[in-house]
Image (cartoon, rainbow, N blue to C red; front, side):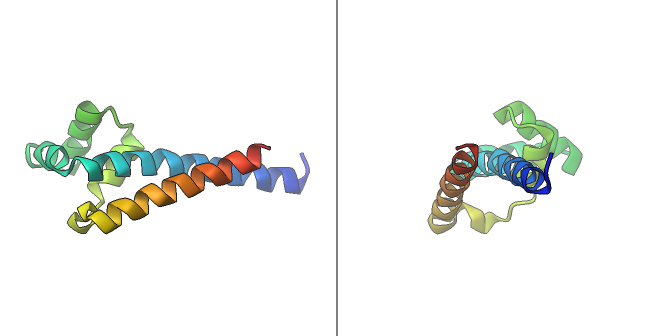
Length: 98
């Protein structure tokens, strides 16, 4: 594999990971009350992540990304920005596949 192909593959991997995380963030910010209920019911951060995995079907990576969010991410502007970023990253990944 040439260094250009490796760089291309690494970029695809980075974009795929970012999409994975953004999908959970978008889901969580659209349903902040469910997220808060899951977190409040938890004894600690580890259990909060487990609750989010159960409640939303998130992976461990997604659940930890959501537990790291701040309340301001539930604002309409922040939600819109996450959705826009998700669409941009998906489009970039699709462009790399061509």
